[in-house]
Length: 459
Image 1 (spheres, rainbow, N blue to C red):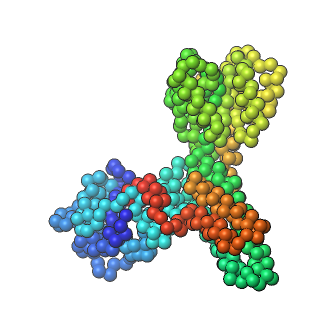
Image 2: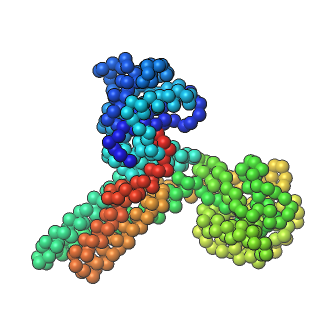
Image 3: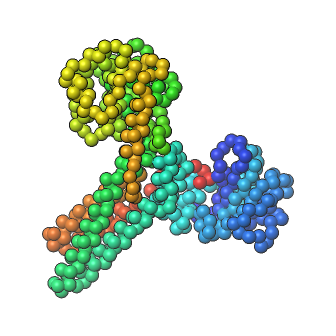
């Protein structure tokens, strides 16, 4: 993406609306403004909206709208920016955009406005990602996390860690220069070690919080599991409020997983219905069961449905014992409460190990106890996303933190083993590079292209 060209795009969603915006950024922005609005006053205040008649380059009136000029660096991109806030008809927006392109702009690439904001120092990379997260947020928790990142919470934390590590690098390089002075070297070694431990511990805290940040951004993954015909798909439909999953008396109807999003207490829940767990010779159903196992491994919350009239099979017992001994939250649904229960004493003791265990009849309308199930799901979802402090939210962030921790661990070992100062400096530099990738202090464009290509045009 060339920074020398002026760019333009429609910055609002396609379709009809009350208002639509055409955004222009670059050196020719003001010239384009005066060509499309010939009567634009020479000394009109910047950052002030003006009711204007927009014309194409043939002089034909296109729209009566609001226009504003925002000279850099006090603009979204850090460059001169013009916005035409038009009536939201697609023909109007297309004609205004075509006029801007004819006047000297080129069409913007996806995410190019935000990329320019990053390259011009208006945003770091975590803030640029937060712009996309803010646009795509579907829950209150995702919205709040995106706002915190946009305001610089994560970028500021990483920047502070980089500053501490830079101090350690300076001390190591000084130790290289004065390594013949044993007393000075010893003092600097202690100072370097203290800084390494400080940064490592703070990174460890960030790493531990990653799952919470991921859940806030992406939603809590709640996976419905159980044997065939236990009522999983019926539960899925009841929770989602639609007939999304096919429900029949035929065992093995669900061959693949289905996923829908719910919102409880401001948290997004990605509800997943899976194929029933059983031994089968059907190749297609077997593939579905393998995916169910994979969904179980990735679940933040397991919702296990059992047909209480059949009781537990040996595989049920094995899986539920394993689940009860794990730290992963679980909700147990004992379905078909209109029939006699087939649980023995061991089964009942197993059920008592779970905090959230409900009896219901999902075939009834409405299912008894379903509200209690929803309340439990909301409680668990809030617990899985609650807490304070700076959060990582993307796998890219986690990768940078883990790489930095590994480099710092090598540096700590190097200090203990009194290794050459030059080797210690290399480990510290690698930790700095890993943290720099998070905020965008890097030398390659690969990561930028990957991130900004996911943006919508006009952002």
